[in-house]
Image (spheres, rainbow, N blue to C red):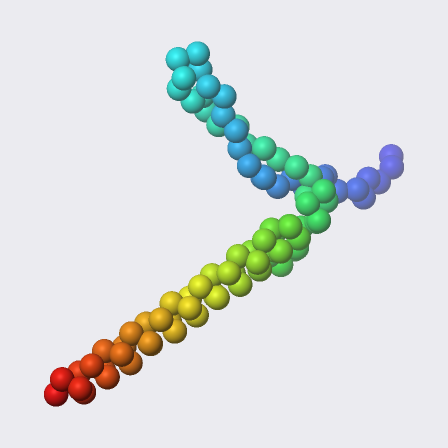
Length: 89
């Protein structure tokens, strides 16, 4: 007997697709998988592939920048409102 130390390949879902029936309705969707190694391997701590971690980092930066713009805009509006209230008082 030989000892098999190789682990089974890991797969990650990368999407799904659904065909249409002849009447135009969607048939049940089917998940699409790829080997995790092809996606840059899986981080054991997070369970995410390297590609997913990069995408999450990128989108997190975009959301943080947009929230900063929002907070700055709200602050500007509040300062303008206080300034108007002082002038009207």
